[in-house]
Length: 133
Image (cartoon, rainbow, N blue to C red; front, side, top):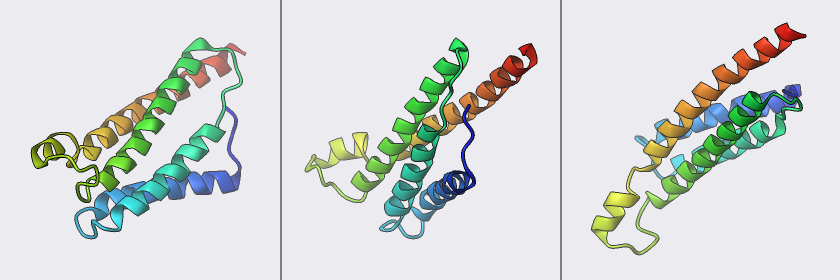
């Protein structure tokens, strides 16, 4: 994997902290939380797109694609956080409750589980690859 620069690592870490802060702020400042989460998600995802794998190991390439799918889930979670602030789509109340209200948490949980899995698996595969050399 191509290493990030110091600035990119800082943006990556700040994005992660902003996502965590935005998710926690929903309880206290629900009007500001989506903005904080969205900024953090965009920074985090942008830096993950900067990390590239330039090798030929199919397993790492597959895990990388899975990781990028979880990045899409993070962006969708941010979008659902904005939709959760009201009913901007004009849906009837029952439909909005079933499909929109607080479902950003489900996407965030899925993205976090996938990120956790892929990070550890990619690290293990990179270590295996390094031992072969």
